[in-house]
Image (cartoon, rainbow, N blue to C red; front, side, top):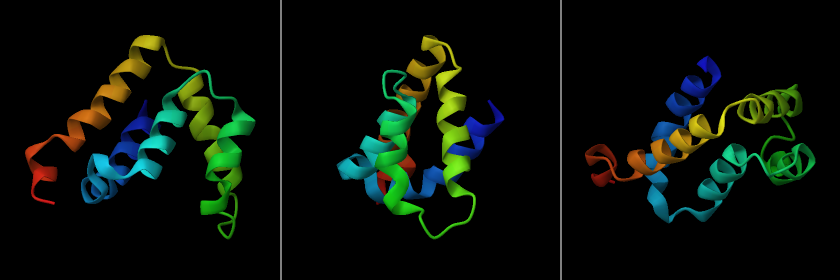
Length: 94
């Protein structure tokens, strides 16, 4: 759960900048949360964005595994959280 908080805190400025009109950001968030997306499929999706960063593949694997080990209720709440961020008054300024 701590990893989820870190992800949200890191992603908050980007999500506000992108708003809900950024299909790439939405796709990555949705595939991270979706338990039906396999680890390989997820890695193939995000690999182009971190190839030059050492140990990033393992970090992304751990991030996806964190979401895979959550209950469906927690995953649903995480999806709702991203929508709440997009619709917040703080993001409305952008």
